[in-house]
Image (cartoon, rainbow, N blue to C red):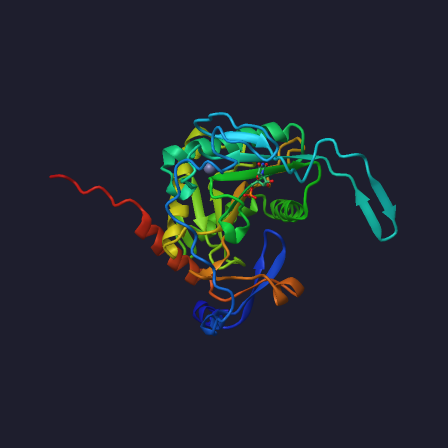
Length: 351
Ligand code: H2U
Ligand code: ZN
């Protein structure tokens, strides 16, 4: 179909394909004008102190299990005191017709990005964010020695269930590859076998300089994916083959710190508030051997549609398939403008 007609038809309800997980979603661009009398998101508190006596993540404070945090000066890692996965869970195997269950062994870490209670990655300089990249890499490598799946993630903001504004993330590692990882693994493998190139490298090449690119440099591309389900969802992809976070070289880690702070500052600028999100890395399972079809990437899933209105994945989404109102292209336009407005002004030559 010709490009003009396609562009026109894409302003009307249509479905888009997500090749990464082999799924579809519904896009209904006209719906954004509907009246909203539902839940309004409260503005998050600003002006946090650099140290908070009641914070269980601040240096020197006592956690729920009675342990005292060290006076850490950069990053800090500890085993989650309420871990969802444990290394010592007992063997379980139920295979009784439709009733199946099996044991799952794993480990959950809490990772503090900075001793400063008031910071967030968005408010850090690239130099301050750089240790976060090493933290993700080092902890992934260590957990990857013992577990197949290493899920690095961050919940930011009350709207996404973060329990504390202190800058922190989590890592859950386990023996099983969960369904999202399994779907991405299968799709990437299938694509590589058919085309001889990694799916996400082809995708990055196709999106480069296009209407959905929001930020990037020689090493990284940030894009609102064509198949984005959340309003301002983005995908951050290294432009060269990389399977796992620890495989990133020093230069890619430096540029990642730049891209992360730039993207997250842009998100904060979008509605002039600390933007809530869940983000996380998808890296190849650590079950030995090269996986040339696997391309490392980070997903950012922010829930907000407007400053005080969040997108709920409810009725149709739960029962049929994800649905979005604003198109990925419109979202990318707005996010790109926000990123531009939030980036430090280019230095004015003095002569
Ligand atoms: P979230 O903000 O994404 O919920 O992460 C904080 C984690 O910190 C959460 O999983 C853990 C919670 O179990 N936690 C501790 O391990 N120790 C504490 O003293 C309080 C919270
Ligand atoms: Zn704190």
